[in-house]
Length: 151
Image 1 (cartoon, rainbow, N blue to C red):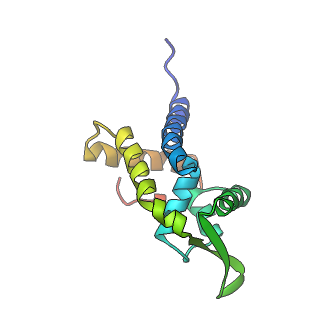
Image 2: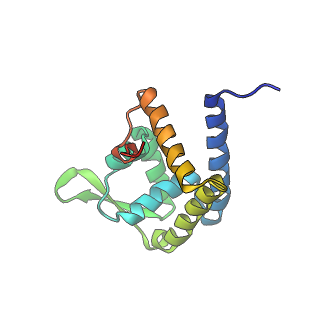
């Protein structure tokens, strides 16, 4: 049997994680990507701009705009002009989003717990540092949240 290369294993893992989270997100009428984004918006209600989401998730403007537009049409968020910069939009979670925050956080934690089942704290720390190093090796521009002093 052929052993998949690391890149293939990472791709398969990513698809499995997304599928698991998508199954849970369905109960809220959301997708995995929408849950991640909306959870961040709820935690930073009114203090985030779409540009910050683009950087945080390393997504294009078009991708983020599309996801935010769908979240807005589903009644999970509103976008209002930033009083400090009228060209920028601030993102606000609606009551519907705030009611779903606990479930979203739980789904994300459950998915991560399933992924890391049987891993020690040290193995988890090493895995994070290895994945960060892989991104560094690939010269991927990462948001500051990915950079860690752990090694």
